[in-house]
Image 1 (tube, one colour):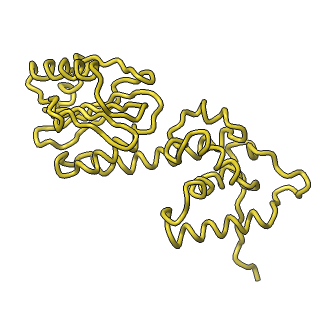
Image 2 (spheres, rainbow, N blue to C red; image 1 turned 180 degrees about the horizontal axis):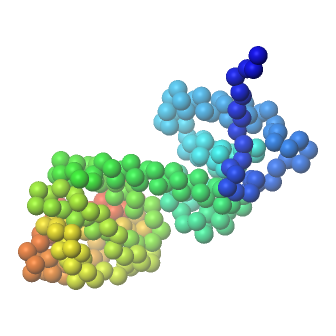
Image 3 (cartoon, helix red, strand yellow; image 1 turned 90 degrees about the vertical axis):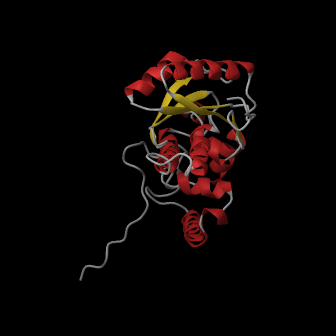
Amino acid sequence: MTGTPQFSEGPLPLFDDDEVQIVPALPSGKRPSYIADHRRRLRARFLSGGAQALPDYEVLELVLFRAIPRQDVKPLAHKLLETFGDFNRVLAAPPARLAQVKGVGEAVICELKIVEAAAQRLARSRVMQRHVVSSWDALLDYCHTTMAHRDTEQFRVLYLDRKNVLIADEEQARGTVDHVPVYPREVVKRALELNASALILVHNHPSGDPTPSAEDIAMTGQVEAAARALGLALHDHLIIGKSAELSFSAEGLL
């Protein structure tokens, strides 16, 4: 009588085996029992207590398990956190910078970017087609998820309809660590194409400090003037820092 098939973890077929060298003394496809035991225990703790029951390096280990099936990934998890600072910054790190860390290859980068994309999509689903005022906290969470841990500036525009429902979220430009080019005419032109009635500007400060620069204030004034000329409302300009944000509207700058 045929028993229930037993499945075991194996390497992803889309990539080469593991980025980290496999222990040569082991038969092909095998791994030390302590690694399998550790993975089972860690997964059990995660399933019973959730992510809050685990420190960042162990959550990162869970992400790395699929990319590196037969190797102890704890040292690599610690190395990634030491290199980039925290779990969020590891996920948000550019692939080129991740690849500079010894032991990181295409499979690891792919797994990290899948988790980052999933987090962003989940946060985005909580704000799209929602009334901005009633979902303001979710909107801030989304902005922090997508922008707070970037190492270069990004400028986004949130477009709203007449009922202040978010109908589009678009990246307008990327820049350097302290500058991003913004073209007010393009911002308002896109609003007309989307039949939007209002907009919210959002950009991040990689330094972590959301205090607006003189250039930020001047650019906001230019966008507001261009919007007003076409009957559009500029509701706010949010600057996203690492752990806080600044609202031009709340600060009386708009």
